[in-house]
Length: 208
Image (tube, rainbow, N blue to C red; front, side):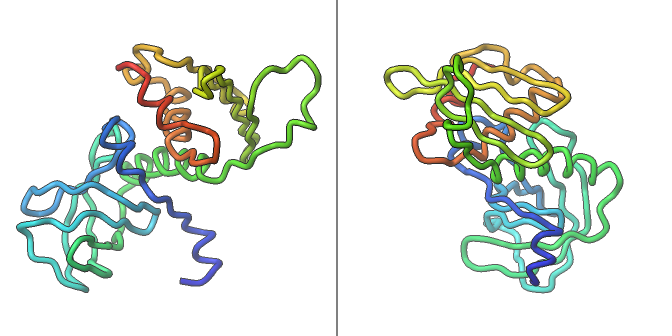
């Protein structure tokens, strides 16, 4: 794949430990024999998932699969097996329906945004601010993170330009909140993998 194609079709690696703890943040493939596999890598063009144990798969094989992403409705699409080994299968999507594309965009855009956040030097912060970290991303996204004395995240605030959301450590009802801003925030945070920022620990503290 050319560098231009990679930019057009960004992909993210799903975090299996995060999905195990919080299924809401994971994704699954339902194969034609109704086996279910965890998605480990996702883009607009395709995905990689755990190889099904009972379904025979081979390169160039055409399949119809169902994709389930977080709490969104599942959607079916044609797919072609692009590669496979003893553990994993990579498939390319065929024509995805308009409804499926909306689900995919809603889920993947937030993950891509989280994976591409960049830290801002605190030297640029004006006085009176007590957050520990500040990250920025495309589209005017800003993430502010507060830590306690034990270096645990106590609060995060995400500003999207036209809206913002704040989440505190141990907060209950977070995953029951169906608002698009809260959903986007949690997906974005699930892709945070930065030194000194224990985001998985923070997300695991949140209640359903």
